[in-house]
Image 1 (spheres, rainbow, N blue to C red):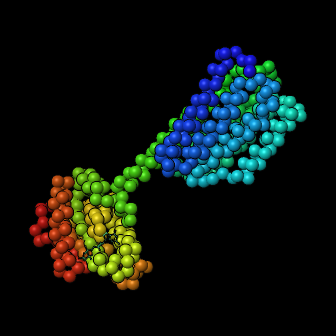
Image 2: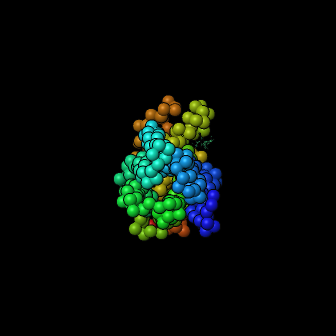
Image 3: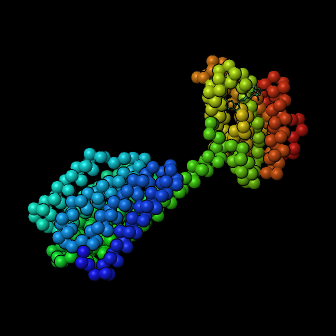
Length: 386
Ligand SMILES: Nc1nc2c(ncn2[C@@H]2O[C@H](COP(=O)(O)OP(=O)(O)OP(=O)(O)O)[C@@H](O)[C@H]2O)c(=O)[nH]1
């Protein structure tokens, strides 16, 4: 290829996009959970390859290679849109993508081999890519409320990208008559196309990686704080949330319930561990249903649950515990034939500093409830002043 040395400079853009694709691919290898990332990576790598090869070609060579280069762009575009749709829990129609792809390749073949028309080829390819980018439109925009700021940025960036893709064929149509040049890939038009591709590629990669990282952090946070069996918060998360709640005077006074399933060992021994697990899940569900949204229900371990009730005195806490008992009495468990009962230890909590002691008091009361026959609510006669 007989190109001036400075022309190789334009390779910076495809090489940059290729590296972004590799970065997406590496992120997928590291994070593993984000299955849309390899599709996005392919959507960067293939067009970067086509762009690099085209940047070094003369107009005649462009005509010879137009179908292959277009195939790389189209498959890349499809992979990109598939990745975006997957990211939003949807998919893109493969038959539609094939129709767009095959029609475009046939047109490109015609306008390169039968009737050589450079600009018509550019219009065809850009129109096809714009249509391809429209495929995940419904998946991305179907949610009325896109969630947090990052999701809104993804949505608007996608709309901008589709807008630009739709505008490009029109721009070419407007420019083409006055813009015949001997060498397309050395034109201002080509540089502008490269620059726009690079800007969109960097921007999209930046926000999509931010989303992927945010999603992974969310999963890690959930795994750190939640009990996988019941989906209730665990002991660690309970202490963190309870300390925050106990420092908020708007939520005072507070009551604490220690709740333990009665004769749970028998459930396991008679009906098996899986049945025991299902009972724990049902109990957890009932506990959550019977408290308010800002109360805390946690699984402290085994078959013991701790509940922190905000804006609650002993009377209110007792009525919550009774509601739970009544609900349990009405519940038919699919895993076991009989009924399940629970015992409660009740105490009041005066402050964050009192939390550990309150749990001890509730445990002592719970022990008393167990000793005095189970299926009851006990409270120590001497509670700290509210
Ligand atoms: N299925 C299941 N069982 C669990 C889990 N965690 C702890 N257990 C069982 O819970 C049972 C607790 O038994 P115990 O502490 O003797 O208490 P209990 O039989 O409920 O008796 P009381 O509390 O005195 O009424 C043990 O058999 C544990 O193996 C779990 O995640 N799933």
